Image (cartoon, rainbow, N blue to C red; front, side, top):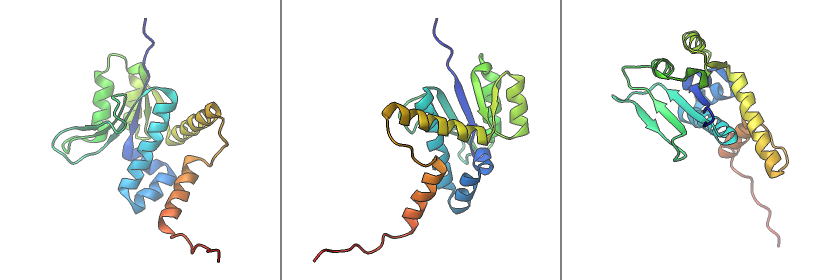
Length: 173
């Protein structure tokens, strides 16, 4: 018998506003915050070998599904304009024949109630962030590499590097 496949559902903008690092990034650039959350989700996908879907509100007439890593086990979904991300998440939970396989990351009370009533496991933003950190540590341990700063600190360092131009280089004469 095949092993049950876990599926992480992430309430995109809800989590961005819940995590301070992403919320401050969102204030600067919505796209950068979305990219950072998708990278976090990808870390869990790759580290745990589970299906991950990140759902955002969208503005198109139709549901849009992207597979940024080219695998159908990792997707970013944009709800159609007439439906919210919450509506998409609710439908996914309601239509699933195995909702107990879902882990739902959201602080939205309605989503949490629907998920809990269907037997899904619930995560807060802090728990999701801790999961990402554990996956990163697991990869480092497997590769035998030295510890690095958490994703939030690396994100800040990357932003600093992008904003602050490098200083003049010393030339030997």
